Length: 321
Image 1 (tube, rainbow, N blue to C red):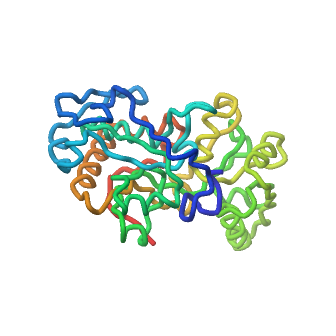
Image 2 (image 1 turned 120 degrees about the vertical axis):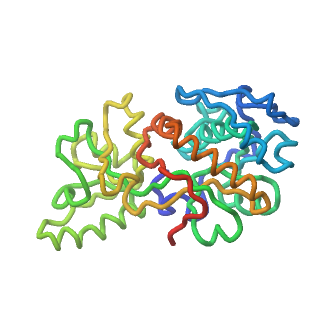
């Protein structure tokens, strides 16, 4: 579940990685996974309706080992929608925001971003051991991790509010939840946020939130569907993906508070890169900035209903804790 206490992956992931299954980029992403590819071999890819082409200068700036291999070895923990998923149950082909971002970066750099499923708690140690060059897996950029890997931060996400389509109760922010029945998953950071919000309600002279905790967020969504609550509080990416996919986008919508577009208590997610490959970190940062500047990143995020968590500047090691 996306709205677990880890907030996104600030602790060990419990999701199954389905084995160390090697998954390569689509054939249009550049040179094959098995051998070296030249800049001339690289092909454009189309993601979320946007054609992305190689920048020869960025390709030239890559580490010699990456250019020789023609690929970047990328770890990811799957499934974790909407960041990483399989295209269908029983299938092995990957999709998701992180996977699409990897293919876009690979196209910009003129190499293949070759994804391998890896249990979350083993990702950073595997990068340190040289098994992977990088990881794209919605990893929270924090100071402890920055000691052993470098991060290029590509999103910032926190807690969001999911309401019925049309927002019939006019919810605009957390303060509007005071005195109303609200669903949340038990034991999550989101429940802690609602508990803290009770003080704000009291200070504003408003009744306390009627917090209704459920063992699973699917139960919380059912309560929202049946009008037993007026909102479901969960992570912003999960809220966006649910609004995008439930009943073909007709069941729910996300409240976008202008004061917290990425969600409440948002923290940066980063692409983790081996400290042995500083040139790769720099090239990824520049490639990401190009995707931001030309609007490609926003369209990729929009494909998954999470445009609000996209960053406006590709930063390096920007943890705030």
